[in-house]
Amino acid sequence: MLRFLPLIMANLRRRALRTAFTLASIAVAFLLYGLLAAVKNGFEAGAELAGADRLITIHKVSLVQPLPESYQSRIAAIPGVSLVTHSTWFGGRYRDERGVIQAYPVEPEVYLEMFPEYVLPAENRRRWIEDRAGVLVGRSLAERFGWRVGERIPIRSDIYPREGGDYTWEFQVDGIFDNRDPSGETGLMLFHYDYFDEARTAGKGTVGWYIVRIADPQRATQVGAEIDRAFANSSAETKTGTEKAFVQSFAKQTGDIGAIVIAIGVAVFFTMLLVSANTMAQGVRERTRDLAVMKTLGYSDAQALTLVLAESLLITFAGGLIGLLGAFLLVGRLGVQLSQYLSSFVLTGKAFATGLALMLVLGLLAGLLPAWRASRLRIVEALSR
Image (cartoon, rainbow, N blue to C red; front, top):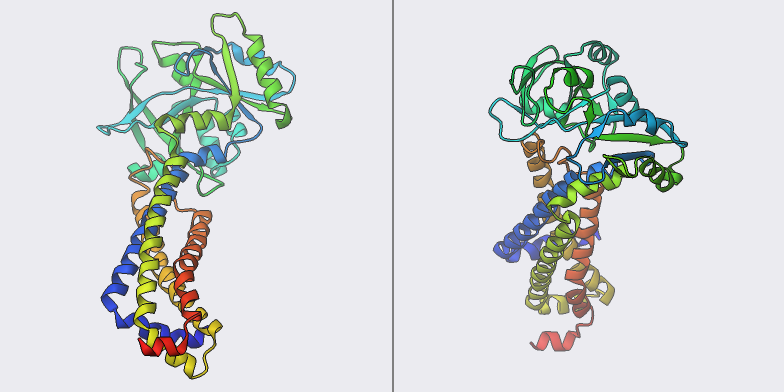
């Protein structure tokens, strides 16, 4: 196929402006694809990375309704439960930022045991566990505000005032953690529940939800039902489900992102297919006599077909790679700014591989009919046009 490259380049230069516009159209399509894939990953990464052995127990009425802290020991006693901890939505803001920070008061040691995907230096881990007023910050959140270990930061809560009526809480950054998975969550901050519960003036002795690790993921439904049965007819009944379902419920509050991305992608690629196919068809019509002369010189029908298909694939891959490269650079620049909304706004290797597959399909579909016509071209009829 490489021997056809000089012919392909000559054909593309023949209508340089048309080639440039076709390349630009394909590049824009794949730029849009890359951005949509990053958005989709941002909404769905948490669900995909959710632990298969973790359940979430919330108030049956609503997530915003708190649960008694005393439920923890009762949940731990249920057969099949191996570990229990809890978390609470804090609703924090840093200085005059409009975006809300994902800040959670937790049980330090148990929480890190529950989420082994959060990794940090042993010294930082020990410092945070020992410092009741310390906070552990995710990498993307720290980069967003330029926080460093040892820095003191004021966080204003939208919900919980301290004693004296002050809504501003001050913490010291004891450590910055990463996620074992590059697309995992690092846009949050964690601090001590004991410190929080003692200092707040409302909701003492309650938590937002419980995280439950079970010994056998196959028994998730049964264990969840047992947990809910234990608190049936109480003043705070519960609803238990898998962590994946819990994360997906948050993502779907803004709509079915996967369906939206697919719908936009289908529309864009159908349009690009029409544009590319029309470009190739015009190119073949303009080179009818050239193809006839090539066949006269001994080129076979298969070689004519290969030439046109190779031209279609070359222009598709060239434009597609330009678009994906642009998306990669743009996602990298926007990642920090969007971390408060999409902590996993990244273009994954899977998305890149899918993009390459789409380039192949688009190139083949756009060039197939023109290539078939070129291969079936009769020399006498072509020369007489």
